[in-house]
Length: 348
Figure (cartoon, rainbow, N blue to C red):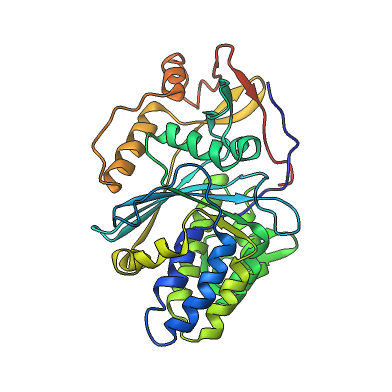
């Protein structure tokens, strides 16, 4: 059994879309000057890890794993907790981008260190970095993960402020870290947007409600970016992104997406993997049932233009060994001797 010291929770956005938006929507006018600035920033954010995908270069549909990470100071985002995770699929033929949120407490088999550890998904990045997180999510969902993006929470306030704030439609009263946002439509600055996207305990939908608010903030940021007209605005965006983002999407790949993926920025839909409540060794988890995993697997493979393939992993095998588990009347879930650890964030 492996344990790691809990760290602060993190908010995550679809940083790849934000990066693509910064580059793609500046195709004319001051493009040449901006590209020189963008290339410098991308060189700072570019951090290739593992196998390099050629999906963007070939104009194919691609997937991205987006991780919110907590790494403290000094711009370090190579290690930390990733309590909120998303998989995005971008299909140039359908011109659709789909965001799939995955609950941080989902029970998964960590992949990449040769051991059969069953832990909460938010442990993967902390224990094995991008490599383990990509392999774990890829095996869980039965799809290739072409690209990754990690983003430090510290960049949220600057990013939202750089686009002049965002408008949200809050379904409830939200209060977090001393900031109150009442039910209704509001224009938020960076600090307010951070609080709006982090609160979960007051939400009757729990972590799922928070995921919906996070995705709302993603769309709002991208929408504001597409409306920017001045070079100074993009300079502010790059300043906010550069120290807080790491990705294996290089500058040339982003430029190649200018024609193929531009329309995807305006067709973004949000979904999530729905888990069921479970108790394992006295700790709370989310269990992705085989039916739910199969549904998400088929949807994702369709978005990626991949042929259907039967999902077979440790999660589906354990589900078959727990026939009475339903997440309601029966919340006990047996891992049959596999290592499990209660890995959570106690900050909120």
